[in-house]
Length: 402
Image (cartoon, rainbow, N blue to C red; front, side, top):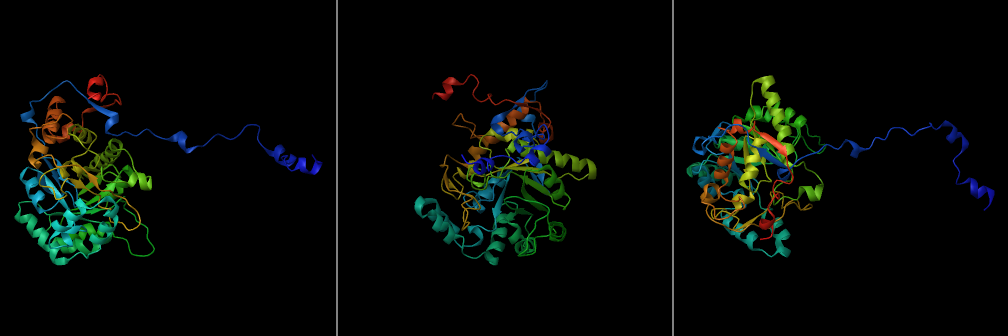
C-alpha cells in the first residue's frame, strides 16, 4: 500500500492529541425511557373493605350533565345516531354525535351507513371519501340537536378545532348541552401559518355552554388546557379498536399511564384553583374490567365505541370505523367487523351470555367497585393498582386452550 493511501485512513495527530482520555458520558434517548402501562399490564388490588354492589354509586357529572353511569358513546358514525343516543340516555349514559359525520350531511344517513357497512374492502376508501365529501348542512345540524332532545338525550356534539369555530356558536344557539372540540392530539397552543388557530380560551368563554376538549395524554398539556376554561378533558391517542394512529403516525401512550398522568394534572389543578375538571378516558376499553381499571387510574368516566357498536341499536350494522377514516391522504382509521350481539341494555347491564367481560359492562364495574370497597367513582380512583402483566394468564392454561 502506498504511503499516501495509508495516511488517508489515519486520524490526524492533532485530533488524537486533543481528544479526552475517556469518551463523554453517553446521552442516549433510550436510557431515559420511562415505563408506561396499558390495561393488560396492571391489576386492581383488594383492600380491607368491601361494599354491597347495590350500595355502589356509579353516577358522575360531566360538563354540567349528571349521568347515572359513567359511560359516553364515542362520536363515531357507526356508533351514535339519534336512536342509540336516546336509548343510552334512558339507561343512564350519554352519546356524543359527530358533527362532521354523515348525520349532518344527509337527510337519510341510514342509506349511506348501510353502503359503508356492506362495501367490499377494496371499494371502501373511495366510498368513504365520496360519502364524507358532501357538505355539512346547517339545517341538519339543527335538526339533529332537536331530535336528540326529543329522544330524551342531552345534545352533546363534537367537531374538530377547524370546524368548531364555525359550528360551535351555531350549536349553542340551537340548544346543544355540551360541545366537544376533539382532535387527534390536543394542545393549548397550536402553531399554524396558513390559518388562524382556534383560540380555545376565548372560544370557551364566548360559547355560553360547556366546552370539553380532547385528546391528550400529557400532564403538562392537560394542565395548560384546563387553564383555557374547559369543562372536561378527554384522554387517549390511538387506543381505539378502529383507530390506526399508533401504526400510521407512531404516536400514543398506553392508556393507564395516559389517564393517570392527566388525572394527576386534574387533581393538581383542583388543589390550586378549586375547580374540578372531569377526565374522560377515550378508547381502548373492551371489557368491564378495563373500564374499572380506567376509573381506578383516575378517569371520571369513559368513552367507548366498538363495544357499543355491537348493539342492535347501533347504526353501523355490526361494523365500526374511525372518525378520521375519510382522510384523503392518511388512513388513520379502518373499518372493523365487531358483529351484533344483542341490545344495548344487555351489553351494559346483562344478563351476559359470554365469559370474556364484553357484556354487562356496568354490572362488572359495579361488582369491581364493590369488591374493592369503593362506594363511588371518586373512591374508585383511590384504590390500589399494581403492576401485574401475568394477572390475565396466571393459572389460566385450560381457558387459553379453549
